[in-house]
Image 1 (cartoon, rainbow, N blue to C red):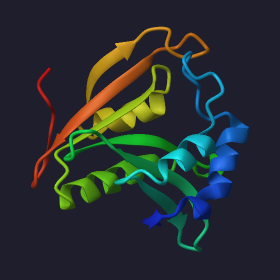
Image 2: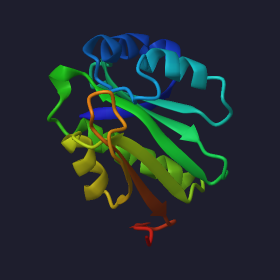
Image 3: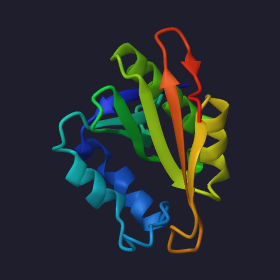
Image 4: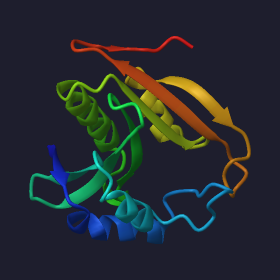
Length: 165
């Protein structure tokens, strides 16, 4: 059993460092030196930024997911999310996204957007299984030649509905 808690960057520093050490995020060509630590530390002072940390029953941090406000005040983007290696394959990523959707719904957020790299099949499956619709595919956007894919979902007060393209 896992729980998702609203957190401060300082409480997730070891997770940020682990994600950076593992090179868990494939940088874009436009930002080849991307660091999740640097990015989220820049975001922490942004109005509306949210960081959630997943914890085990024993209180160990095992992952995080971030929400970044968009210009449209009822829209957020799911920013970097990460699961420690030893906890992968336990549906924590899906759990995190489900809980963020619940948080968004209870806070009047009408739309969520996210982006990941094209070959990140685990994340893509989570988003597709939860009703997100593929909205963009930027070819050769990553330093390894992979694409960046975007997904959106519209949130209603009672259920998730997919946006029309």
